[in-house]
Image (cartoon, rainbow, N blue to C red; front, side, top):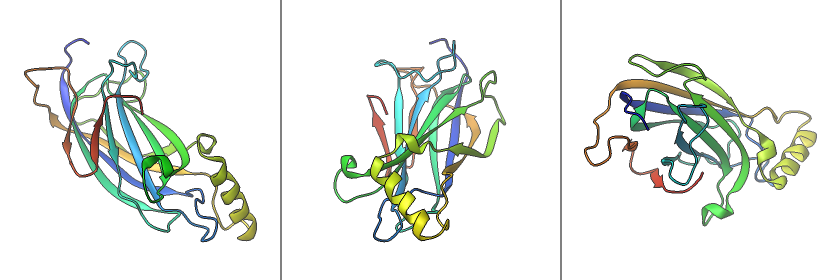
Length: 198
């Protein structure tokens, strides 16, 4: 990867709307978002999700029993090149135990910046709307949401969206051992580094 200027970015996951129903008994969900950040390939703008590509991951806290959750979580990432990154958002209904038990409610993608743009000082995306594709979710949440919409006579929404802001907050420190590396600056509690695909 060529030596591009490196930036520190603040990613804010604000809220979600019309979350699919994960718990049919309560017509509700315990939503959380798993965000996976891939660098954009400078040649085609697609995520570099090759085995050698760098991947960072972050998880929001869970909002209990809510189909319109507010997260307002900030994730700080350093080492972002001006070619930008791709943010994949996986909406989940948290269940006790491992991640594998969480119900998949859908997935969306945000390209930062938009194709053809470059990141630079002062660049900002204010509350960009990300459509969540429910076809990427579990069949049980489709059925639960459909039943809940029938029983509530349309009171349960079905166009799922997540709002995200991104802004450049300064130049990044370049790591001596790997000047092209991206890294999480905080918060450490929900952030995790992944070597594989998201």
